[in-house]
Length: 211
Image (cartoon, rainbow, N blue to C red; front, side, top):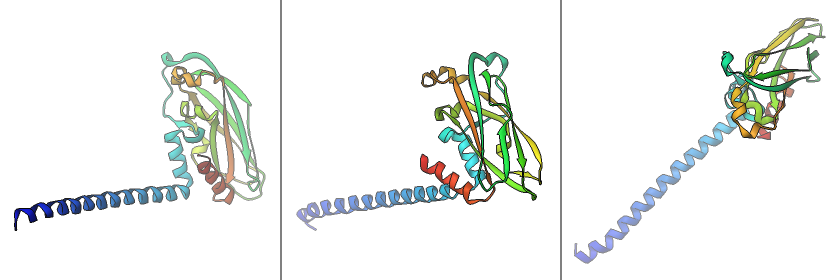
């Protein structure tokens, strides 16, 4: 092959190599997009346990955090937060569900305790699952639960009345967040749905669509 032919073929080879690289990049991008789409679809059909785990980890949409221990006494900060409590039930769940107290005051890092009361008005055992969040939504990552009935499905026997306690604290780190300077009240809300009901699925769908 002459030197002129060699010079002419080299640009063709370079162009072919560039096209091959571009095709590989496009294939990788397509694979990534497909994985993301699959993940989103899977999330939209997530079960209640997956929803709970995901939200606890991220604090998404005002969802609270989960901790195993309280802060040490020397971490408590002398800043009062009023914590209000709210309880609701879906129409197809024959329960009365309400907080025992409307609100309490706690200092940052201090142990907080709330009790909710549930009564099954049906003549048959009924299972319920609670969704939960706090407002303002930005407070979710600072609200830590140590013990809560909302971690598990609840089954009440006919006419059974039960106490449903919540042990929590508000993270002292909230004090260092200038975006939280205006927060003096946090509302903790629960909504009970009949387990495996359309209402529960709709509530989870609305949660994801809101984000």
